[in-house]
Length: 409
Image (cartoon, rainbow, N blue to C red; front, side, top):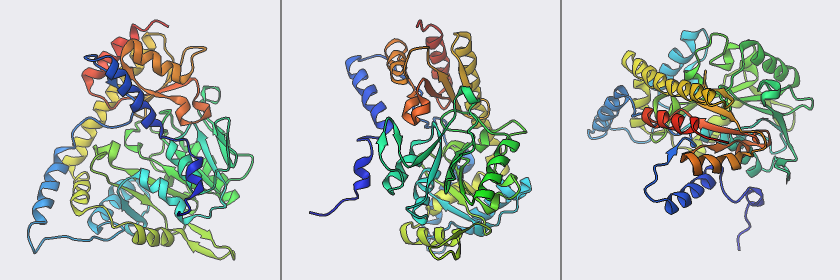
């Protein structure tokens, strides 16, 4: 029989959101006719904007004519999209990023999970805690995590982010090779200011660490002191890779499109100490394992950068952030403490004293018919917290607020 990758057997048997789905399905089966409001998984509910839909229809028509047909595209992404990204997301904001430093993909989740392919298995990893599960799980798969004990992996450096430190992670006392940062943060919905993020860039430059910066929610930022790109920080191009997504920005969760930025200044070293451009390695990896996002999808993404597309996306983001405000205000009026939800579509709820994350999950499901995500599913420091998303329909959000306001602990 074939030998398997033993690292996969170290992982818990199922993914966090699979466990939640199973619990909800069982509850629904035993309570037929009950309306359950789902605010757990971070999937969007608003339709893809009209500009992107129209662009896809035209792109589909292109595929029906010999002259405009597109088969395999460039693994890095079509030039028409990469140029738009460079211009609108970076150069217009005073950041010099060129199209050849941009790699279009099928989403930030894939890229944050796959980036470890080009990094040594011996790299030491640091994560903020709580954290998006993909960061930890893919490093377990790669053999970097060690052994699981009391909810923590022995070889991963955990950087607690709780109300006790205002959700601002402390710089590691022990040097990591790789640092995962996600801001605006999933799951806590909190952010770092320019000066706070600059401390991480300075640390990485001094220590020779690599920052993997997930900015999938940057479009939700409204506060002027919160950076929308790590490359707003001087020196970040030498130490950081940035991941972005059209999923939560433009509703592409089912369509799948995102991109990764690897500046030409960013280098790693091989076993002999020789400098190697990180971008060249990622390009080689993508050319080998990925055939590129589809032509139709990339035309849809390109349309996001038109005047019409930008306005339509803004309206959708405003819709979700209104949901976030309604959740924050409704929970506050019910005496429930929350964090986040200002520059991000996530509300991080403090569970009542003495109530665990999973107990609160059961409480909300049974008494309110509302589904959220237990904080402990995002890491040890998530215990005692609970995530709700603002991605629901407005009527569902209003009803959920009403139900939660009537919750008696």
